[in-house]
Every structure is written in structure tokens, then in C-alpha cells.
Image (cartoon, rainbow, N blue to C red; front, side, top):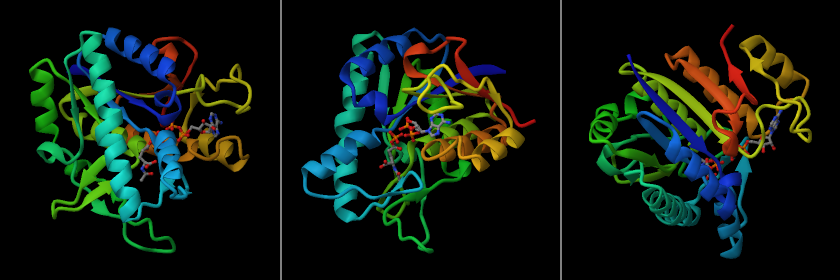
Length: 259
Ligand SMILES: Nc1ncnc2c1ncn2[C@@H]1O[C@H](COP(=O)(O)OP(=O)(O)O)[C@@H](O)[C@H]1O
Ligand SMILES: CC(=O)N[C@@H](CCC(=O)OP(=O)(O)O)C(=O)O
């Protein structure tokens, strides 16, 4: 089976121009077919504040009203996506910036209102990913760069967590490829002590994840990241790695496994 690397980069690195440039230089050197999925939540929150809108996140997901949707669409699909593609082109990677709307790449369903009304937030299923289009792009030697905006097929844009996009795209492509999913961020991996970058937990399985969550060692944004990771592993993704964005390929990282 052909190999494919799907690499997700989060807002902590994107927000820092030097770190982003260093990461993209490393990404350019990753061999074989690859896809970059990017977030940008931190910068979007700063932009919202600058425009007088208080960002609201619940369990790592942004409550997205109409005004917030307009701004995050500009920020993710415009400014951030194009800046990343331009820098990859500088690094001689033929990157193709794309949202989930273009080419019907990712069709989502607006999250139903339960205790919390998340507004224009999209939930995903692997069947909503146009895997054939991504395969075609890869076949043309292009490197897709996917942002966190999706659509419902009825003209409505939706904001979707970038970790979830990476996992769902990875699952959708795992029929055609042996997929390695890398979550890259500003720490060395999943840590025993969130303030000690030397406390990386080398491997986590479903049982140890439950214990670490119960003990409060894994918290906040790391919970949806790991939920997405275990979903991906249980639905055909070969390998999931969580590590530092500026140390891709380094041995310091967390590898996830089901058992
Ligand atoms: N055990 C842990 N190890 C590492 N990070 C953790 C842990 N528990 C909670 N976190 C938090 O999770 C954050 C990563 O999640 P998130 O902010 O969603 O990242 P990203 O924006 O890159 O997707 C870290 O910056 C850290 O504050
Ligand atoms: C619905 C939802 O939460 N969408 C995210 C999309 C961006 C993202 O996921 O960015 P990071 O990966 O940098 O956190 C948001 O607006 O924050």
C-alpha cells in the first residue's frame, strides 16, 4: 500500500512567524505524498478580540455565531491558508491551498443544538470527505493544504475543528493509503507534567488514556486531540504521533496505539 503522511499544525505555531517558517521548512523536507491541515485558533481569537468580539470556546470548540464565522473564514481560508501556501512555494513545494468547500472537499453537518448552541460549527463523517479529489491532487504531485472551513452542501459555511478535519481526512484516505497522522504543536508530545517538556509519555493506549484523563494529567485541548487520534486508529489509520512541530522525525514524541 502507498504511504501518506497527514500533518496537522495548530495555532500555537502558526501564530509565531519564526516558528511557522521553521516548521514549513521541515515540512518541505518530509518525503513522499503528504497533506497539511492547519488550524489557527489562537490567531483567530486575537483577531476577534481586536474587532471587539469576545471569543468563546467550550471543550476546545469555538462557539461560532454569524459574525465570528465571517471573521474565521477570512482568517483561516484567506490570510492563514494563503500565507502557508506562499511559504511552501518558496520552499519549492507545489502546495495547493483549499478549504472544505472547494471541490466539495469536506461536507459537514451543522452541530445540533443540545445543552450548548455552538452556532455554525460543522460535525464530520469520513463519508463527507472527497477522498478521490485528494488522491487526484496527490497524483498530480500537488500538496494539499487544508483549512478549517467546511460546508453543508446547502450554501452554509461551517467552522470545524482542525484536529477533527485531520483525523477524518486520514480515515477517509486510509482505504487507499497507509496513513500516518501527525499532530504537531508547541510541546514535545503528551506530557506527564504540562509545564515540563522533558516529561513526554512515549506511548498511550486506550486504557492509559482513560487513567491519564481521570487523573487530570490530560486536559483541555489535548482531550479532543486524543479522542480524534483514537477514532482515527480504530477506523484504519496506521499510526498517530503527537509531537513538537519543530522536531518532526525526532524520537521525542508520543505514539498512540489502541491496546
Ligand atoms: N498532558 C498534556 N500534555 C501536553 N499538552 C497538554 C496536556 N494537557 C493539556 N495540554 C494542553 O493542550 C494544548 C494542546 O491543545 P490545543 O491547544 O488544542 O493545540 P493546537 O492548537 O495545536 O491544536 C497544549 O498547549 C496544552 O496546554
Ligand atoms: C469549531 C472550532 O473550534 N474550530 C476551530 C478551527 C481552528 C482550529 O482548530 O485551530 P487550532 O488547531 O489552532 O486549535 C476554531 O475556530 O478555533
